Length: 79
Image (cartoon, rainbow, N blue to C red; front, side, top):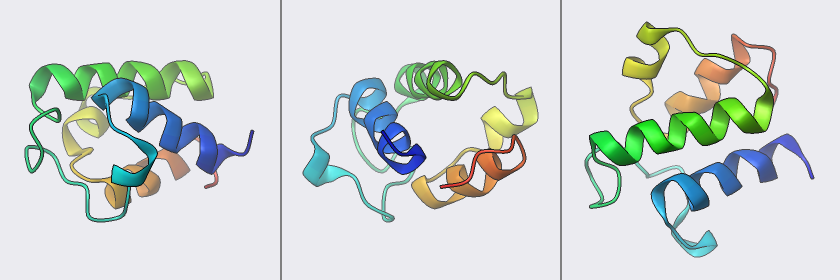
């Protein structure tokens, strides 16, 4: 599984989305499942998938699908 596939799978599992719903337009609180609880579920899925622990500031700053890709680069995850 590629890193991009892992990233998308974390969105599927953490936010209970279908593969078709995942795209660069996804933003925090723009869909029903990406609320504060869904956000923490997503972060947990990402941390587990990539074996990382995100800083609190990065968790707060993780506001969209695209922004998440930028943040993960800081942890050595290339998507």
